[in-house]
Image (tube, rainbow, N blue to C red):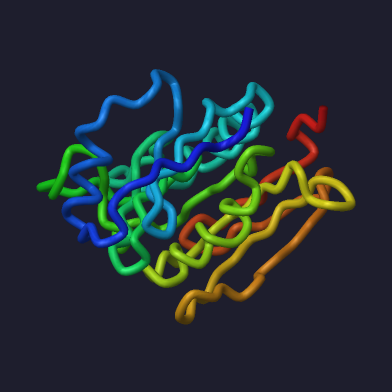
Length: 194
């Protein structure tokens, strides 16, 4: 199954777009995001996808401060890029007074993790990292299960404009080190490949 885009008025402002995203009844179990101003509905992630996210999450729990959390389905708002993105994992301090129930401002995130889905790999590889970089999220981890030449893991950092610098890139099976404030090594050999 592939991603579906939902047509809406191109002249809608950010607040109207978010209101539509929040109030519309979407297919149960689907992942609904606003990517580059377009509402995108994707099927629920596959089992392998979820296993990879869970293994990364398990490693992160050992190092995140007590006032931070690891969220699996929390949207990150990037109004400047017309994005309401739902990474597979978001690591962020828990806000004392959340601005909204449905999302957090991207500026709060310390790390986002995207595991590519076959249906929207282009968004996971290009559109979403550009939005995260523009919002100044310090680290973005892309687990690309569908990369040409075999699965890879890329760590992006040092955002400038809509561009990240590649801090590390490995094939599945090789270790990848996350810098401080995490300071851990992810064993990508634990990721399922089939």
